[in-house]
Length: 146
Image (cartoon, rainbow, N blue to C red; front, top):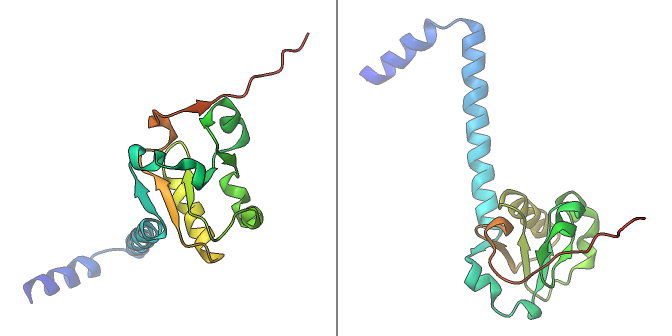
């Protein structure tokens, strides 16, 4: 009861701008919390060692931009940038697991959310991202212009 009275007094002493600002901040915090759980529930996070197992039997997707992919990527990965997942999800098979990765994990989880919307179920994300990958990689050779 004392806490409730304290909150009422706190709110009644605020001006309209401060009250609106607090409401926006609380709303934004709730939205971020919901998005965090949506990302975490969209795919299973795997450590590098688990991610490496039988990569040839899985669909390996790098969701970074093409320039980053060309600079270096996990051997056997295909590049479908995060912003193209909505249009290019038809290139993926629903009957095989999909392993997603990027420099960190944020875009990979968001890609997993988008893929879930299209009926994909076996989705996995590289826990520490490509920046901490210690497995085999491939770098595309740049063309030497004369």
